[in-house]
Image (tube, rainbow, N blue to C red; front, top):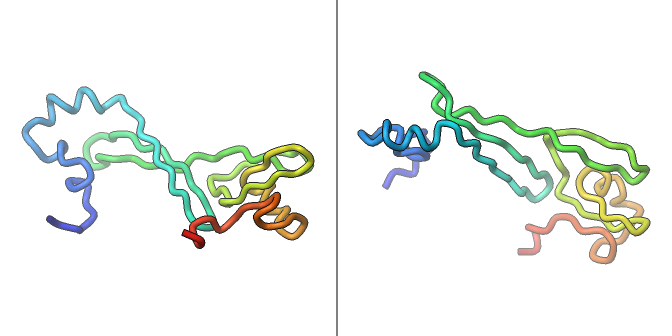
Length: 115
């Protein structure tokens, strides 16, 4: 089994004779991928393209509430969660509170480091 990352390994249906049969079921489908990283999380969508672009992948910008209620939008979301003023804050707003709150009590980050 090849470990090389290629479109035909990810979507073998694109290189088989059954393409016409399966293509109709996946051509209007959007796939969502979440990369939950140690420090940053990114959400992307993937759709089947045409001709020379068999797969088109784009990151999604996500709104993240800051501690003052303002909204920050970015495709990079810090992998941080905070409980602050009776509100759950995820992402950039939580990351900005790292030095104000206490890890394990009202702030959680670097989850994967402890696995």
